Image 1: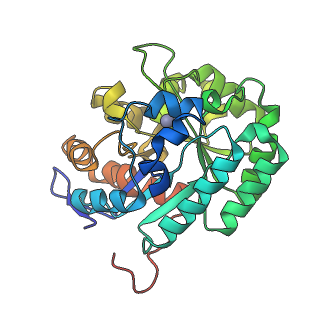
Image 2 (image 1 turned 120 degrees about the vertical axis):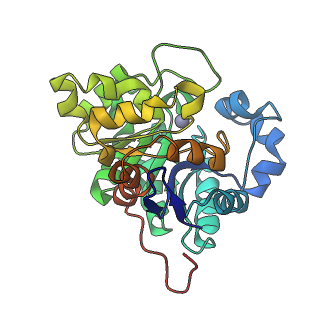
Length: 301
Ligand SMILES: [Zn+2]
């Protein structure tokens, strides 16, 4: 575990999957009840073939793939009560993982001040950030972000990264695509210049627009992840985005269980990236952005 050979023979240690999703056994076994309680969950998971996994399933997959640590998200529930329950599960599952799993709090930003308080509660339970939030699923407007203020204020006060679902303005339509396109992300970023943001799914293509100086200025504090990449892009996207923004702003993330960790990691290791870029992509950037602590004493690394 935790040691992979890159193609040029260099050792990549401490691989992090920076974007995964887990659910409590209650949701995994009782998905039908939750399908009736959340429109976005229904859209993604009414189909019984859409995988739902627990923290234990994730750790088994990590062991098989040679992944040391994972950043775990819940789900962007619209109902704040389900968000709280999910955070309780994430705290429990990640707390029991011997440091393998670090987690992001899920909150429903439209709730206002209580959502900010939930961020603080989650941090007291061990959360390393907030996300994956989703403007479509949770019905907030990235172009008019005032109602997200309490969540952003809590993130800024606690210096937490906020992971946002992002999507492409072009290309094929798929379940869960939504409308969080680079233009809307940019309006959000401009409204909150002190917030650290992780733009999932390659930022919906925002890295390309960073070739425009005014966009680069606003997006400089954004980090991108590769969640669900193979559903969206060909593998050269890794090299291309690293060339656009630098490997210190790019994180390997699978969106597991959307992508299989072992196969996806193997394909990335086979890209022939330099040892320095691979180390940042697969480990260093995520450690820095999410402040992933060293393994606790006595835990197997
Ligand atoms: Zn997403």
